[in-house]
Image 1: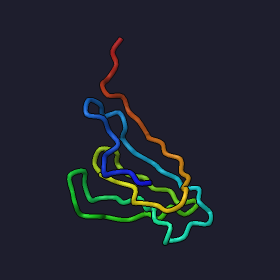
Image 2: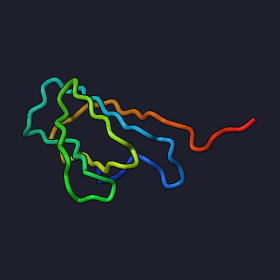
Image 3: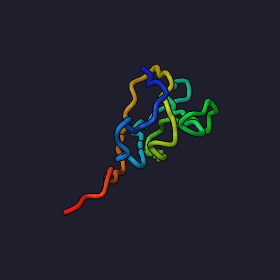
Length: 93
């Protein structure tokens, strides 16, 4: 599988601030593919980095500012993804 280029925010919300992915693949080999490709900015075509999904690797990036995708993989890969969030708007009482 693969995952096309995107950012981790929704059009009408800025709650997701930082995206994090930790990989759980102890026997991953380069020929398996499946790298996380990070771009310089949300609107950029320039690649900043490719992160291999080796076990214990942690990738964190700004959710709205950094576009990313998952490259094609030939093996099942495991990861845990989460986000640091903030309030979209201040609450009042």
